[in-house]
Image: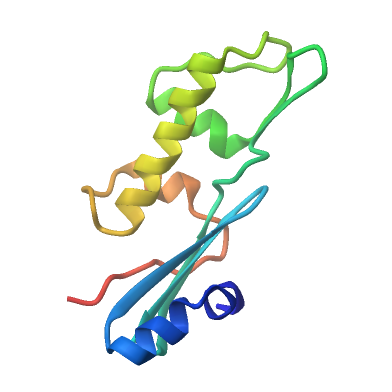
Length: 129
C-alpha cells in the first residue's frame, strides 16, 4: 500500500476517479495494491521478484526459490542449482512470472500455479467488477 501511495497510483486514482493497480516488484516478492477512486481496495503478495534465481560471478545458478522452481516446472524449463545460467531460459522464466501476475490481475484465466506462487498468508487478490 505504501509503495502504491509513493508511486502516485493512489493520487492518480483519487484525482481521476479510476481503478489503478500498483505492482511493487522487489527482490523476493511482488506486492499488489488496488486503488479505486483513491481508496485502497484489495491487495496481495506473490513470490515473484528479481532474486528468485541467483547467479554467481561465474554465471552459475546458485539458488532457485521454490516459487521459481514451480514456475519453471509449469513452463517446462530446466533451471537447477549448479547449472550454467542460460539467458534464454531465464528470460522465459521471467515471461512465466509475468503470466502468473497476469492471472492475479484477471488478465488471464487463473491456474493452479497462481496458488503455488501466492505468498503464504497473502489474501486473494480480487479485481472489482
